[in-house]
Length: 64
Length: 502
Ligand code: SF4
Ligand code: SF4
Ligand code: SF4
Image 1: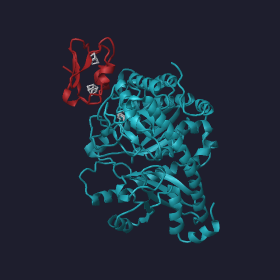
Image 2: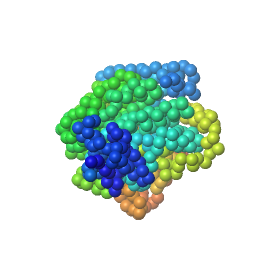
Image 3: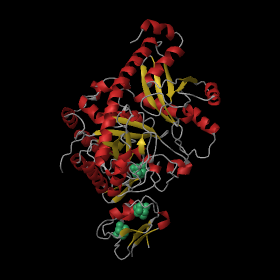
Image 4: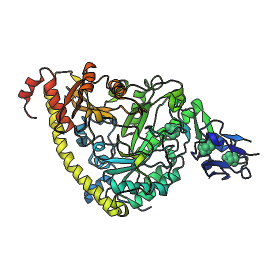
């Protein structure tokens, strides 16, 4: 299980990349993407998925 | 961190004075309502050294010096109902909006280009498009590089305050002496209507709880920054129906904690911006409403009234925006490859300004005294001035996109604010719509002073009760205002002869 970014809604603010405890988020080409293999849904780090908690756009960092 | 001298172009004594932080006396001991042209004496000399070239901190400086914002801070840790970070319109001019985002190294490159052809440049700031302290390492790295390369530039920072308490020491170490905090409320119930959530301690807080956290962090940041000798400017967005009745309390609280300037600025709201307030149909205050609130707070001199709510990538003098013409690597001057030449040009410009300021100060004081002497008791009227800078009446009405408004009357001549007529997307509008906008932003103004005004606009202004005064001498604003006043105000002409030159 992992999170993903809905590219059409992303503002490219980079807040999620900065907060991710696993370094799973990076800029690829035009937008930010989550590396599903590296994403742990923040388990063991925090109670809430950091990317979803910091993202200014509702419904943009979502569980797949 | 090596300590860099802040203003190396000055005489050693001045540098020493500016490096030493002079604490401000408590609010009660500060002079009441000092006219802006007397402000210089009212400030402790050390403080004057620190603000005299900063176009946002000194009303006078904004006539002479330019600033640029570098957009190295895209991410944000809170949400504001007046902000939509997805929106990015090249005609737009408001906080939080920016077209291209920079790395710290890219930012330094851009500053180098601008500095090479703009000797007026005195300040480089980080003002978003997100929060300058959310990803603080990007902002601090930018400052560190700039300090090293162009130590005579003043560096400043804007933040919502949430992360400020964590970075006071780092800012201190880089000698960042100017910080702006946006504080819109004290009462968390009110705050919750403005900021729906904050991201703090690895989780999202909502509603009143979020607003309480933000408030506590803002107050702590403000207190600690002022205690560290930083000149803190507080920005408050005036939102009719939400925090307008609350603004006096905010003003008192930030003053009590040592804020140096309070800038009450209007909400900019339009459904097309896609912000929560815009979509809800919440309107911003009219210029006249803003003026009333500002006047009610003007119990001392430290209210900023010349803010233009610049973009996070703004470049140039306040009120003009050259960001579209500036591209990294696109400098045209030969000074580009010669930072020494650029810094010498800045030094030369400062010397020119020092001379012209001294002369204008004398003019302004004379004009102020003249108006006081001739004004009937209680007279107070607003006058809109067309200027392109330099503290002079030097612009045609038709070229003005903003007006410098002065209150003239028994209290002398006081700067009362900037009224912009270009704040909203005006692309495609005709001349007549432009005049409609101008008439609405000048609704409480009784006269307009410019170099020249066309017959058509003059008719419409006069029909709206705004007298038009042309003056082609390119004189100091205060001198022109005093001449206009002496001629226009009934009874003052005779008194003028008795008062003589002040
Ligand atoms: S859920 Fe957590 S681990 Fe996964 S991408 Fe988001 S921040 Fe990174
Ligand atoms: S926080 Fe949201 S909007 Fe910002 S880059 Fe990440 S996904 Fe995009
Ligand atoms: S603090 Fe600034 S960037 Fe962040 S949401 Fe508010 S207005 Fe937008």
